[in-house]
Image (cartoon, rainbow, N blue to C red; front, top):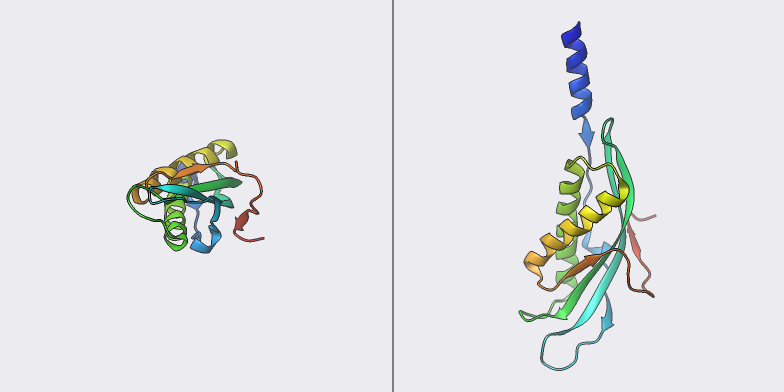
Length: 148
């Protein structure tokens, strides 16, 4: 009987679910600094409110994270098209969400900070010079994922 109770508790502790994929269209980039000349330059951003949710009896999480992704229009390697920026931002965010949700963080602010940091780390592999923060730029209408 004691063994059965311990097994039930262990199974309950391991029953954690998370899922979903952030589509590239969630990242709508807006030019905020125009590119001038032939050198690297210009800046565009996307703002997205992303829901991080983990269903778990021991480590539940349900929080909206405001994420601002800033990308150079042209870095020292190449020009960054909106479609490339959207695809790379979505892939990095998906992977970052899985990393954070597999962890043990249950505090919203810490989860969002870790999510932004992981997204930046992953995105920086494919697009040099990227910045991922909470919302900082005024005048952009943020998108939401999932949509309202």
